[in-house]
Amino acid sequence: MADNENSEYQNMEDDFSAEESGCAGCSGCGRTDPVSDENAGGGSDQGILLHQLSEREKALEYYDGLLAEDPENGDLWYNKALTLHGLSRFYEAMDAYDTAVKFNPNDSDAYYNKGVIQSELGLFREAVESYNKAIETDGENIDAVYNKATALLQLKEYDEAVKVYDKILEKDRNNFSAAYNKALALVQLELYDEAIAAFDVVIQIDPKSKEAWYDKAHLLLRTGKTEDAKEAFNNTIKLIPDLPDSWFRIGGIFAVVGQKKESLKYLQKAINANPEAREWAREDLDYESLHNDADFQKILESSASEIKDAVGAVEQ
Image 1 (cartoon, one colour):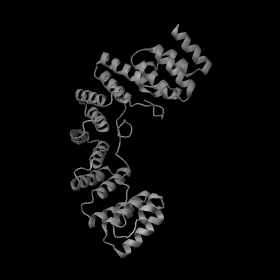
Image 2 (spheres, rainbow, N blue to C red):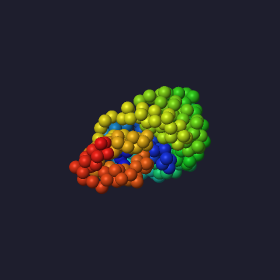
Image 3 (cartoon, one colour):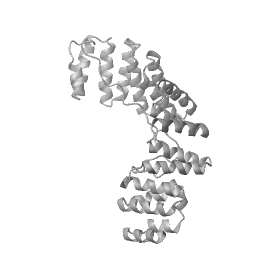
Image 4 (cartoon, rainbow, N blue to C red):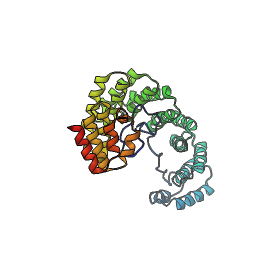
């Protein structure tokens, strides 16, 4: 599949990465609510107010003032870490989270937020360690469990990621993101029958997920289940809205199932709506069967009016 913002779905023949695969990614950007200043020994909630107003530099000065008087207050260190995190001063924030757990060893959110920063920085091995500590201190910290699995995907430790997703699904069998990412991980392990079954679970959770139908269809095609693949592709097409940013993908699906006329018709519409679709089609794997086709090449090399005539000639 060409790498462009209008391509909605992952081609399962592409190389997998959590970012490119349709993987749902981490659960968020950290726990962003500061501890009440009163609970932290500050006597007021001025820090929370500054946080809510995004006055982070002022909030940082405020927490530094409180810490000068109470340097072993873990909650204040946590709030300072959140503020530094919000300022994208990531390494300082990680140091502050470390100090927070020094004084509050059971602060699961501090471990979790440190893991989020490490994930953002691409330090996935370190992030897994932080998420493990968050889970050890709070077994109900589902965000930490989910983000751990995502980090394992980035480390290409797919078997371990599957185990974590299974734990999530044991507690929440309707967790769409966990079910979807488990299926993608099974594909990377080349456990194709298990992956197809996993996509079936995803579709049971959300029968209208065009992405799941599309990925399942490509996997069925890869494993030689051609008729089942066509049915899955047809279900995908039914779910894709008839909009300009969808026409390119619909055309690609028709190309995969061997319906050249329909494929070129939608490709024409896509190019008319966005001329960049010409270049996408040259690289997109869904259109691979047409890459050497004379009618396909004529459409890519023609003007808008010529494209219409070329498609008309194919349909005659």
